[in-house]
Length: 363
Image 1 (cartoon, rainbow, N blue to C red):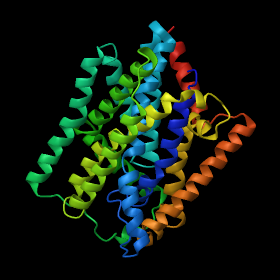
Image 2: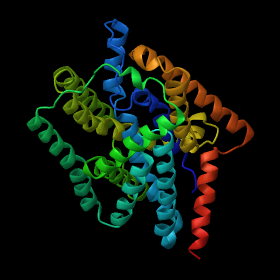
Image 3: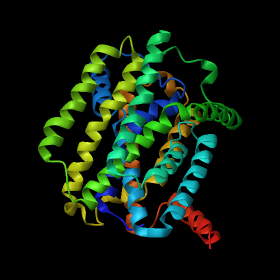
Image 4: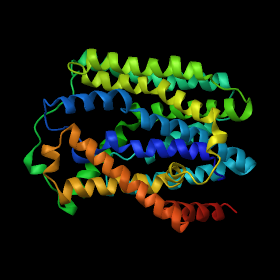
């Protein structure tokens, strides 16, 4: 795949931002619980993360995945469908390994399945894809909100952490991962499969807008309408729902992340000539996003489950934010080394070999 530096740049931003909302689930996967704190710094950071980060980096990543599928389809022409399917097959395989062995919060298998759905409709008219995207995003989320409200289970459990779960043996972690990853897979068809599919379709529409029709969203629409809509929506939901209706708030915040993500992507794409340089460190982060995503999980799980297992009891929002800064520095250092040595990430190398093997079997 030929590289589009603006896409790599955006992917790099999204990748570096993921630990900001993932680290607490690497520590306490089933709840994401943090130690209670009344410190003003923890409360402020909690608001900032919820309003400016929660769901937004994942949403950017998902939309860019749809754009990337279109770029691959454009590159490979008639053979594009087979080659992209092979890529998605490899991605799903790596996702299974990641989910079962490292962290059950894996998203790669979901991306593989959603990507296959995108391939099945990629030739449809833009108006039809827009309707599909709206239905795929809104219907599952709104249905789940109604079910939650009817059941009365509207709060997010923040129970005390069972001390028996502090620290795992290797076998204990494997058992925990298998049980929870299977549970995640069982829930996949209910909401996340379709939500990610809808976001990828948004990416397809953005590709058609910026690469085919040469149209674009104005900076006024992005900066003065979409971004304030997203921030104010997240803030209103946080103030009115987070305390008593935590699950509903989380789902609504997924929706609030969409206009912000679209605006950021469109702003960068409108000025993509500014990113037409391979020297950008963030572009290198985007090029090695698979290796760095796996590195995030591996380091997070090792730290919280083996090296410092009591961190999961005592870490507040401030502690997680400081660890996030450490993760960012580590990843930038790794990518800087890759860049200096002209290396590819190990996961990208394995991915390429597996894809080439499947491609050769097609002929």
